[in-house]
Length: 467
Image (cartoon, rainbow, N blue to C red; front, side):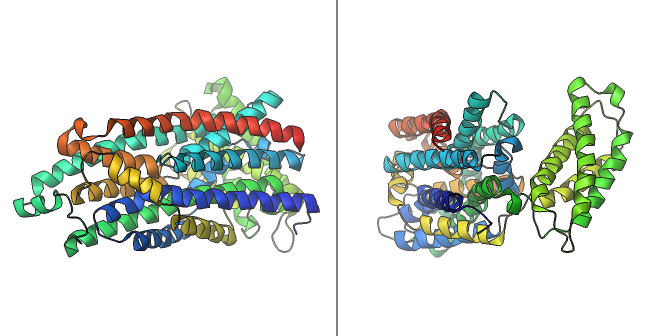
């Protein structure tokens, strides 16, 4: 298959299996984020809740797109993906996957709602830094890492704050009878009124869908890392994309570049301009090589991918530079052309999306109880009320949805846990939080990045010496 040696093919299957295991673990690790509120408010029985969440996680991945997935892929410079020794690519992939799985399983075992997103990002950064240690070359896309890091840092703070605000609004706007009903603790084993139950099931559904939407894309991104790293001749670009469209966009960008006055650019900006011109020249030689089926020769697909990424990244930075004086129409043309050109590289096959959908959906249906107990019972000192559960989940679903639309990975765990904490604080102040649980969760949050970075870097260096 794919013209690979038997040993490479076996390693490819091993890597794909590890990616599915990671997404499966991610499913039951993060299930509590969606089902804790409906279980602890008696809106759904646990079995029905996790199956329902699993179905909507599955659907969420199918409709998630690839923006977040490509953010994961592009976190590492392309040089790390095109190592001539395919075993080195395998070492990179196995190191980041195994370190992510180990940390996810460890935090799940101790019932800590740690972030799978932080775990994955830390593991990817680890192999990048490990490669830097071996080669002496910068091997992390720090601009992308900073963008993702800011998203992961601000999202729990926003979740905490928005949950407090929403609880305040509910208290001020609802009439006395409704307020009393939704701010009361659920009676044991009693199903809530139908309208409350419908609201909580709806918020559970939204969190599940957007969790699949965002976290599922991370799994898709992992698989694309594997496929591009091990079989670049087949998956570096979308073989089904119309190359003629790409040629048109390259010509558009080539026509706009001379409008930039290079004399006012800084030295780094001039270098970006030079690399962009060189990559355009490369593509003008590569793209006409397409055959009767509009496909590029297999040995040129990774080169085409590299040049497209260089052009789109540099053009975006140049167009946003204060030194570049372009009209709004020219900037819009630049943006349209680069976004269209990226359709050749930013894709995933349908079978990849389906595979990750199944892994995440099935994972959601098992192993959920440990984290559910922490989220439902141990963050606050009081039992979760209807208002607290709905507020936390509505905030989480909204923020995850916005992050997915923006192409940014965000931690479902962090957003919802901080939302529940905010809802608890809104009721009775900080004293309503269980200090020991908050401390343990915070410790897991703080340790996730450094531990996964060190573990992933160590495994990468070890595997590189073996493979």
